[in-house]
Image (cartoon, rainbow, N blue to C red; front, top):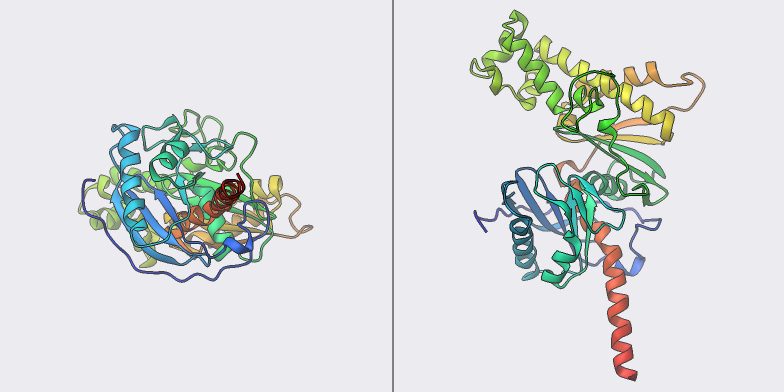
Length: 363
């Protein structure tokens, strides 16, 4: 594997007792499993216990998307085997950005990798000799928040992840709602402005083109490139290069009171609130959890989002309003959730293995 591993410390979680078909049974709650979070720039792997604590974590660079799927499998395999040298690992959960089929076996499409209808579960299971489950990364993050974070004790929640784009997931009565074909939760590609900004998905006017990290950066850079005097402080922070303006730079400027940065986050927040109101009309959850890198802006983003949500909520004033709260687990949510979901396949694997042993004894 190219590059050295990076080890990080432990993190404590506060688990809730799971319910629903996706939850492991009580006897397996303490089994250590490995969670893998595949991002555009890094692959994180960690051993997670039944209370959501990361016992050890490794990181490696994500292979270039031009590389073959086998190269990514090699990286994942080496990370898992390294961890398995020091921990009694019982299953592996993979959190991947993209479309994962309903059987949680194949990655049908991954925007940052060369996976196209890739049989990832079976390929890795054969190499690792461990049960493997593949999950959409937003589903994995939402599961972690429901089990150990901002969704603990809530029966129905929707998670919205604001990163480069918008990812989403629905948890209902202890089950991840994956849809008939496994592709539910792609909220970022709801059309909110017909004929609006072009989206990489091929459509125009998708929600994530107005409320995401990309949207925030695009608007800031356009202001700076137009030599607007109001954008001069942002441009100075970026060393005079509009192309060097980033989402974290805008967020930090807003925290320090830059009026244009505050206004940009307000606009992103207003679009966020509008989309959430639409989701409330369709799904009627008890709580919305907002995660992803852009959520680091906190109330600079969530305050405007709540205001827009209340303005656009159908039946406003005559119905209960779902809470809108920030995620708690940060960047580790996808890894923790994937590992926790892997306990379901650990249960099946142990059951099959035990039955084979019994047949051998009586055969």
